[in-house]
Image: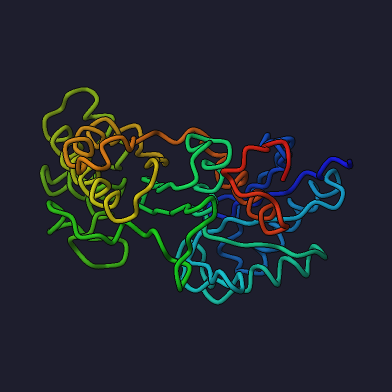
Length: 313
């Protein structure tokens, strides 16, 4: 029996584009990376992604290509429904079709947080589980769901966007969508920065708030504690709605928020879900490219992420 060819996963973000050659066991066999030419427009962004993928495809034989990208992706067409200004003009871009034309092969596309969830479910912190909720706490707050081993995208490709849940304590903090009172407005890097500015009148980055909290500064500690509590309580409520086997937290703010979030999460969980853990994601920067490769593999008729035969696609 011929061994399955490695697949290529691509991560298109506002500042960098990464690609990886991923083996059938989820291991990364090769990497490429370049700055994203966001200000030059979608065509330049796709040209960069295609160049990185093509370099890896030369070593992959006939393997497929998957993409995790910033923005909301139409799951049926691989077209960007909505994107922020981090990728100007990205909304409406036919990523699957246009990248497929450049590479001469089919390309599967999903949102970057969706791809990260698929990667974590396959070979990361969610390995062995087929029902997961992943939350990415970085500059903003994103989320994704894996159900029965496959991504749950919803009708518009936006399922799992936990950042827009109402959150106590966020009433004076503005979400990335422009409205106050949402979870992203308090439990994200931007939220930590804004909350600290309200407390002290000083505007610093979310990372700087986390660093000050770690030294015991009272104002920063209070901001982090409120954010972590809001996140943990919200995730406990979602467990009762979505019934996952585990909840994973990824992103740059995860280490800062996870201890307090875990305490609030455990206290808030209904008894029927008391065994659902809140875990740190483990794949780091590789999560999106690994999950994007897995997307291409699953679409090609492979087993789902919960399949025990992990040496196959």
